[in-house]
Image (cartoon, rainbow, N blue to C red):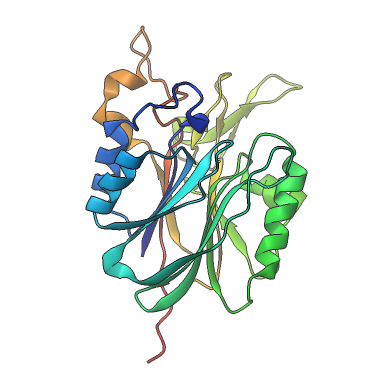
Length: 271
């Protein structure tokens, strides 16, 4: 099974609540042809959802009227049944991340799919909530929790922790890989650039490159994962500045995160 997660940068429709999702997004999703699509920083767009349905997907969203939403789309040809089990309301002042939990039967296998985006406020409470929720899921369930966590996986493991039996993955590169492929940040004390073996899915305004998009899983063999920025090739002028240099941190409605893809080996269904 192939699953992709993508922050498509609609930012709650803040800049224009009537804006259509760019054709670039539709073209890239067509090219990806994934079994499962998880979109975060999504804002309801009927025409877009109609296109996904026409591409053979079953659609579920959390329909959050106050901000960013999660969309989960599952290819109908791999779907036995699906139901939205848990959607937490995004009330002002609450400490839940953007969140959608879906129960599905894919190729005869029961799979829990959770789409998530951790907001850039009150990290401790949001990670506590998602950890508590993962702990409530039956220990025999196969779980995929994927999205934009707005934190490095090392911070998630070391500071917030994961429930027993859960693992987190982030794309990496070989230690000898060129530095442009590696995530990096400026050391506050030495002001030097520090490079890590993680690939990167987001570029900050100061030039730091961070791996913010991850997959947390349970019940599966380790997935094969990667980041991709190839969608920029569909409209290269959008991702260039006036000097012709590459731009990644783009304004809405154009995506500003890499696509996280994962190939997940499903357990053998009971006969």
